[in-house]
Length: 366
Image (tube, rainbow, N blue to C red):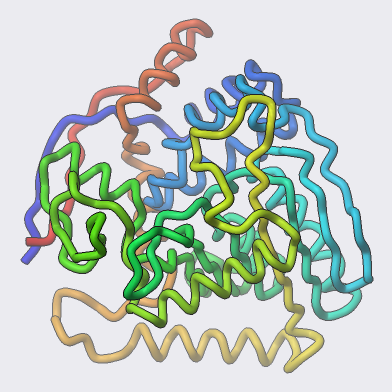
């Protein structure tokens, strides 16, 4: 059963959000082109309903620039080049910039070799992994991305958190990405830590199986949450370790339990996050035309499957996010209080429109 809760919340128009976010980042020292890239990544992510990795990150990124945890004007450069495989040093950049640089390199090498594999070290939080895989998909490639993250997740049957939420994203799609796109972006934990904090602020219990307490026992009390649980038990732990292997071990970056949490970095020092991106050119395999036809068949067959509940059609990865994108492009992007305050202050100082109050609806499963 789904309950709909209506409440007033600040929202902002997509175009105003891009402009103000870009200004905020430039005011923090980022070059104009870097600010544009980060602003577009955050706004696009919020438009798709992935609020934990969208505009909500702006205040944190501004703090990292102000304290020197993130380098405002980094020298992102290749330190090892073997043709189809490269290693990039991000020079403490905002992770979005490092991820986009890696995606561009991966695309270029995939055009020449059929495969482009790019590791990144010395980076920071890079937002939603689908930002990079969807970019590759829109250029006719299959994109795969993972990133290391500070430890929040206990291994299956363990107590201490050892792994980050360690996302995996895979995307593929043709020219009309709004319809013919496969876009998976998932954490390898049951839930992100931001959702635990959100439930705690609302004094709402957690779902069973999301977290464990300091003794390793499952709990639904947000105040008792000590570690997140891996997705699907030992299988989720295995996937989390794969991400650590690729994003940390392979790139020479610190492992998850050696990373500081977002917002807890040492001033003047990057957090050392590692990423790994892979681009595959279908032309080197079955061919672009046959690949596009097969992808369309895969998506159409899944979406056309008989639904168990008539009101809830079967969806493919990325479908819910496209629905959010259509709705928020018209109604605006909902904001949390801290981000709304940052953008409102900036809008007033520049004499432009900023966030406005609007009634929004939340779906709550009960």
